Length: 465
Figure (cartoon, rainbow, N blue to C red):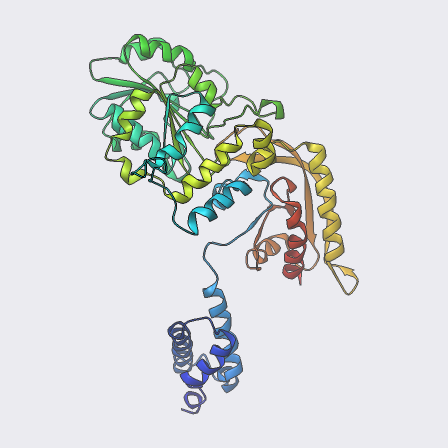
């Protein structure tokens, strides 16, 4: 009984907490207090708590305050990506350009003409915001945007192939991130999968043998982060398009990442751009807006007007359409693509993909210098630092076998393991994500901004002390 009597009252706890957290609702603080007190009563009852000091008000307020502080932080938080994966799916994929960020803010802070034609004063169409830009950039006749590329593939197949067969090579029946499987989405669309060829080799004759009165289209799927090497062959898209048209069928392509600029001058090869695919004769192409394109999450569909028009009339579109924030960000991003140099310098994803090894080496040295100045305690270093040549990755299923030369900053903590440092950096004010290799926690400057160097140093110092 004496221990129970030592428990502070709910009112006493609330009086202290409301001073510390004046903006947190009273009901929320009350729930935290009752939860803590219930836990303490259970501890007393079970014999785990035997010292009245554990029940003192200051200790109690400290524990509850920590819980409140953690709970009140947004679940979606800013993190620093030092892993060197540019299109990092787990970290939100592409970082938006400043112009896109401003467009989102403008659309969010008031009303906007999402579906209002300012020229006529009548109801408009939200696709008008981006369709013209997409057609100009890709060379397509028409365009449509939905909420992601999986939705784009679903809408395309549901509209053009439902109730019929779609012919696809066995080597392209891929599963990508999030367990998105091409055969499964085809089944959801009401289309029947018709596999042809072998896993590693498919010939035009295989497609010809599969055609029948139920065939609705031919489908080419980009392998994303999957590759077949060695004894392998596939029918080129241009040749397959001509074959499909000769038999009165549309040629469809799920391009996946969807680059709008040829990145081969920077060593990123063997990925067709969307304009190249359109010129090859493919009738409908789907791709993502938040991968190599560098915009918001979106599924973009471009191609022949007759097919896109049918998709626009599909009732499924209403369930898959984008909101004003996505369209605002996408429009601003696409506007940058009208000038190739502007796109390369202003879109963070493109800027990071095209950084030279020399620039990255210089930036790694700068980051290392900032860390050396900050990672000290009483004049003694908290960690050893060194530089290492290595490779960054594009990520997002793009260019999977092609690394980009970089220089890593390697941090070897002196008072804990690298694994422990990695774990501590997840709980600091601004979590820092990096690579772990042996005794070192490593940071890649390719995915860091110069303005983040001081923040990284502060977070590392907090984690190491």
